[in-house]
Amino acid sequence: MNVDPLRAAEIIGIVAFAVSGGYAAVRAGMDWVGVLVLAVVVAVGGGTTRDLLLGIEPVWWVTAPGDLVLAMVTAAVVIAVATLHPQSKPDTWRTVLYADAVGLSAFTVIGTSIALDHDVRPWIAVFFGVITGTGGGVIRDVLVRRKPLILVGEIYALAAAAGGVLYVVLRGLDVESSVAAGCGAALILVVRVMAMRWHWALPRFPEPHA
Image 1 (spheres, rainbow, N blue to C red):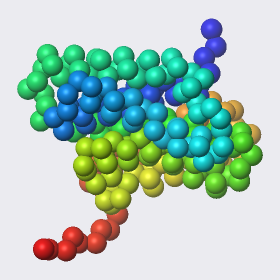
Image 2 (image 1 turned 60 degrees about the vertical axis):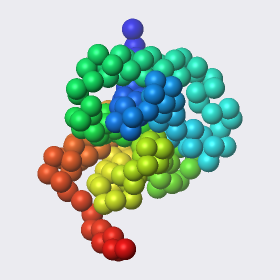
Image 3 (image 1 turned 90 degrees about the horizontal axis):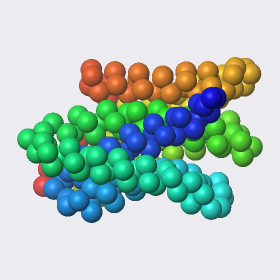
């Protein structure tokens, strides 16, 4: 059975972002409904923003309700694990970050591909890829009252843009779509994980003291 690599990436991204949103809700002390809502919103947020900006109607999850179910099931697993192992709560930010990195890599490539299929300029397609990959994380951080990772010096949007550019270049060179997608996603994941591991960051302005 042949599996569409972009569809596989979409499934991985949904699960990863649902885990990221769910565990962020656990860390924030939300109830089960909060975990469910945040997991689903983070899983679909970036793609929804992309579709609205591209004028795609209806947005993708309306015609693929199974993706919403997948996000909900993932949220249920997060709730079960967090309930059975409450002592793991102090370590969940690491889970959030690594799950987010996987979702970022998968959704950036998907967003770039969809934008290219709608005949936008290549650099605009990369922009849409970054929106798709980072949108869910921005929503998550806002809802749990954290400064979004994309705005605090993290190698985050930059990693997404690098992978999106690689994907566009490989597509332009007529490299097979699945190979191009794999290379783009791998670059994003490697750069993001390395940035977290070695604390790479962009220069930040100091916060003013009250």
